Amino acid sequence: MGLLTKDFERVPCTVEVSHCFDSLHAHVRFDDGSVIYPGDEVRVHGAEIMAPFGEVVTEQRMATIARASKLERLWTRLTGDLEVMELCEFSFSEEVTL
Image (cartoon, rainbow, N blue to C red; front, top):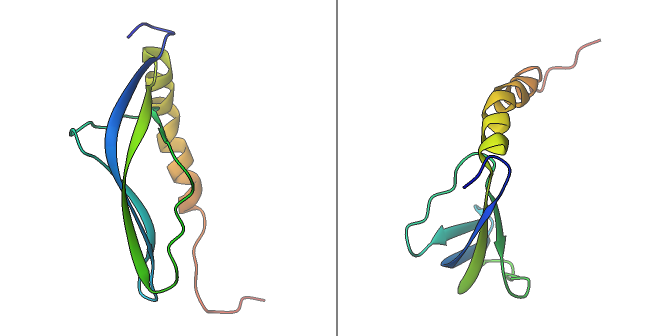
């Protein structure tokens, strides 16, 4: 991996999509144990997975991981904390303020 170049990996993965009353989620697990690092991008191949209400759908797919360049990874680490701090500026409550 170079300072400005990206590496690409094709990996098998398991996709789980849940559309239930108590859980609405989509998870991707890499079957070969691959790990995602700051700045990496993942694209799961195949048609859209639609889970009917009340069901959990699990499918085997292939995914492409675009590994961030060294410069992108450094930039993501430097600016990531700032983006998280933006979320800290907001709070949610049921109180009405005038």
